[in-house]
Length: 395
Image (cartoon, rainbow, N blue to C red; front, side, top):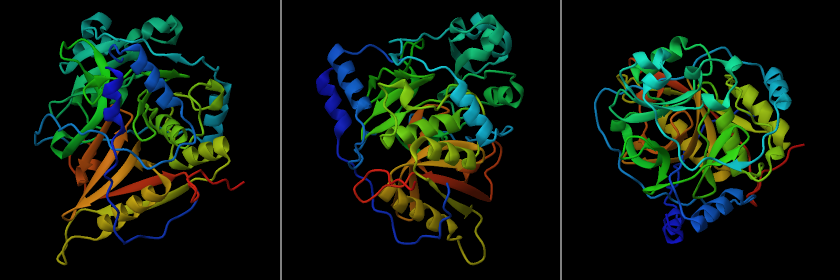
C-alpha cells in the first residue's frame, strides 16, 4: 500500500439527508505489509483528536455472495451492573500503546483441538493462547476463529474466553451478527482471509490496514474520523462500541493508554451501564432513543413505525454523529441511514465480525437465528454535540 493509495481513503461523503418524521426521545442514554510512509500516515489519521468534519465516504465493495437462507442472531448472557463493571475496568492494568503484529496466521482447527476440531465450518484459527498463562484456561478459549457462516461467507468470530455453552452452538451454526450477504449492498471494510487462505487481515479498498494496539483492543483507523474496533471476546460488543464512540468524539487519544478506562472484560452490559460509563469518562450525558419497529403488514398496509424510526435516527446521526445501536442483546455502530425508493439502507460497523457494511433494513436484522420476527426494538446511544461540532458538557 503506497502513500498515493491512501488518497482513496479520503473521498467526499454522499450521505443522504433524512426525511421529516420523528418521535419523542428519552434522555439518559493482522494487517498485511504496508510501506513505512503509509503506516505512518495511518497512524497520524488515528491520532487526530477533536476533529468533527463531515464524514468521508468509503469506496464500496459489492457483497461477494447472495444466498437465500441467512438469518442473524444476537448475544444474550447475564448482564453486569454498571458499578461492578466500572470497578473491574478501573482495576485492570494499563497496557502500553503499541502496534499490532504486522501479520497473523491461521492454523488448522486440529492444531488447537478441543471444541473447534469438531466444527466442520472452521476455516482456520488465530491462536492467542501463547500470550496467556496456563491458569487462564485452555488454548481453545483464546482462539479467534474464521468460520464459514450460514450464507457461505467466511466471517471472523471473537474468542470465547470461557465455557462454550450456547456460544459454541452459534459457532457450529455459523450465526450471522452483521447481515446476511443477500442484504449487504456495500462492503466498505472488514476482517477477512486473504487469497492464500492463511492470512487474516483488515481489508479496506483492497489494502490490508495494520492495527494500532490500544490496551487490549486492536484499533483500525478508517476515513471520516471513524474506527473499527473488533470485540476481543464474545461478550465485548458494548466495550468495543464504547471505545469507537469515544474515539470519534475525540475523548480518547490512541497515543495515550491512560486516556481511557474502557477494557474488554468479556462481560455483557446493557444500555444504562454503557451510558453511565460514557458519562463518567467524558463528563457529557449521553441520551438514548428507543424505537419499536413492526414488520407485519395489516389490512391497512405497512406499519409506519419503521419509517418513523429510521428517519429519526438518520436525523440525529446528521446532528450528533454515529451512535451505538443495541438490538436483541447485541451492540454495533450505526453510521448512516439512507432512504431510497421507500427502502432504508443502514451503514453499520459490527464489532463481532469486524465488518463495515451498508445493508438493506429488514426483519432479518432482528432475527434470532431461525425465523425473522414480526417486530424488533432498537436502542440508540448518542453523545451530543454542540453546533460547533464538539461534544457538549452537561456537568
